[in-house]
Length: 396
Image (tube, rainbow, N blue to C red; front, top):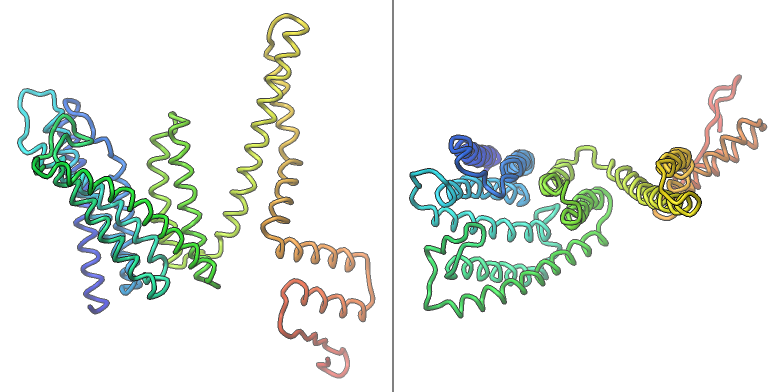
């Protein structure tokens, strides 16, 4: 396929994804407030994001499979949104008239969800080059593909109520094969988890062998995936931000992958990781200090006066304000020493050199120190210092 044909096809798929999602949203607005909004409404934002980044990647690098996977995910999100909202209206509407085919639409929406899960596995295997880490991963890839195919097919034809659209039952369920299909779905689910573990292992091995730009690309991807998993894991513990987490976490992965593959501000990831480590540790430490201060002072007030006092909260807040700057400096220093040792040593060397220059030194000492600093911080294969003589021209 030529680059021009690939670009046209990519933007056609993008238009299809956006059209499907827009149709689902219009259908939802037209039937409210009589019918609820589709439960997984966040795909209305996730789908266009996947499709847009996929089209951009294909336009720049049509041979990279990651772009096509993103486009496919965008179209599947569109199918899920439209069919899911149709099923919601048809099955859960409280109006006098009910649409036909609600169970079929719910079945299609469920099938789309399962397909998206399988797509994530191949993103892990192929990122960032669009190729497997080595030919030795082909057997594993075929096994993973067959596993998810069995899992999806067994779920598609398994009898019983639809998970997200109960009490509607699967219109294509095969009652006579219920036991076999349940077994295949259960085994496929467990094998699918092991396949995800293998895909994560491939990403780790690829990272260990990577250098230069590829390592930075993998850092972007791993950073977004880690934050996404942590956010989803904590969403249940903090219900207030649960919806926001389910929106931001899936969006982070395609955005980070797009930045990595398109190589836009690629090397900013080190600074972002650094700041995330610093402020996460700082926030946790100050939160513990604040809670401990409030609890301790409240206990002291109860002991002395027999009751609590708002002074505990005020005092703890003032302590946090006073500790913020020095605590931030200490945490930043610890993170730099522990995770960015080379950069930390280079910064300290430059600080020491600046202090020596500020205090004053002769030209010979300055030349020796400058060469030493360059060797220690940049670590070049060879270093030379050329000085211009004021009377004879250039000299060494």
